[in-house]
Amino acid sequence: MEALSIDGTAKTPSVKFDGQEGVIEIKGRSIPENSIEFYKPLVEWLEKYSGTPLDLTQVNVQLEYFNTSSSKCILDVFKKLEAIHKGKSEVIINWYYEEDDEDMLEAGEDYESIIRVPFKMIEIVE
Image (cartoon, rainbow, N blue to C red; front, side, top):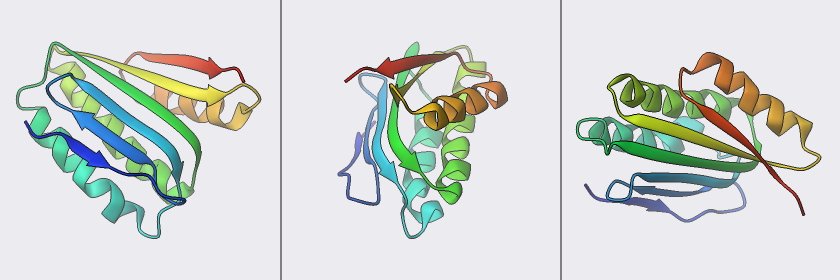
């Protein structure tokens, strides 16, 4: 399974999906011009990965900020992960948020209430 790697920009997060290691990372800001277009390859990659996932898939999400259209796309990514989790592979989502960022913590909690995958809320203390 080929890894997916996208360098971050001022408007898009960096993405590292490694099927060999079972580690998925999304980091930075997510305010792309077209969220659906940006997230499409991520969802497609997860679709392929779900065919033969590792026993444990670790997901690290560390977003400073994301816009409304990104939030829907992030949910689509999480739904793919939920399908993998339901298929008897373990999936853990580590949701990182800045110490004072109540909004980002709340966003993680909102996703956690929708998606049937264990979330770990991890505070980043500067």
